[in-house]
Amino acid sequence: MNISEEVDKIAMRNLEHNKSNLIGLKVKLENYLKNKNTGQYLSHLYSSDINEDWFEAQCKSACNQIEKVTNGESKFNQYYQNILTENDLVLLTKELISDISLLNQILGGRLALDNQVSRDNYLSSHQFFLHAKFSYFTHKHIPEKTCRNFNFSTMPTLIRQSIEIKLKNMIGLEKVEKVGGGFKFVPINSLLAFFANNPNFIEFPVCIDLLKAINTWTNTFVHSGVVPFCWQSLEAVDLIEGLFSTKNDVSGSLSWHGFTYLKSNVTIEDIQMALNEHFNAEFTLNQRSVEGCVVYS
Image 1 (cartoon, one colour):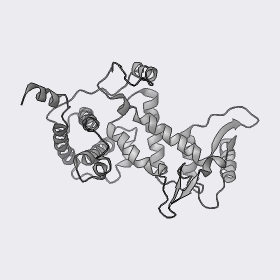
Image 2: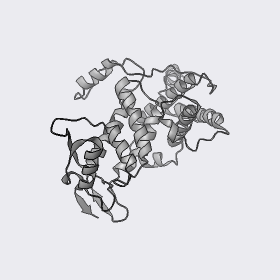
Image 3: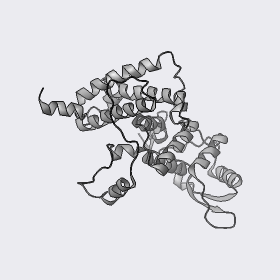
Image 4: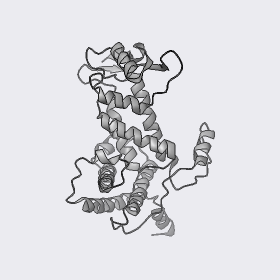
């Protein structure tokens, strides 16, 4: 083996070496999880409580993502084998390896890893600014302040926006005003809490308690710049994907705007009245915003 190949392995630029490392890490994670009940790990994955349940949830989620990448028969590999480049997979495997090392440091070395990788868990304001400044440049020459990939690390921002805009589109929300006039701010977490406590309006295709937890988790990143573990972002994308399905398997119809998931016999007017009363505000909901365009296959 020449020096260049050895450097590539150390720098985690060799895909097969990265995969081999991940397989070994998965064994250590699974050994840690032996005889532990991880059936409800999702309820702890996005918790703000850094406790044993939280640690176990991170280990379980990391194992799930390693399986997706390293198992050639996984749905992930079957779906994306002709789309993902080797560089894409190198980035993904590198992020997993580095974050498992960071998790082990937080765990106080309980995973007994053979090697440790130094990993920052934040993004600086300078990085956000430069990526905004050069967002329309094809070739970006941005000095990264940490060892993290910016696009990968900012996934929570996109997840947060996708949840907020989807929920607003589902009810056709145009604006909220105080009674008598004037803008009123109603945060997305309050809207999610409202629909969680009033389940007769919308039949969410995903667990709304998880939506609430994921939304709170993304807000933590948006307001602090502290980057979560990469498997949390990957898991969140998998969990909320049902919100954005565009095919109805029963009718065969396709909607360019997805589905509203309003329950039968529920009208926009019903939701509007309930929101007005609950928030002591005047909501403007537009029926046309939630109908979409339907094409029959």
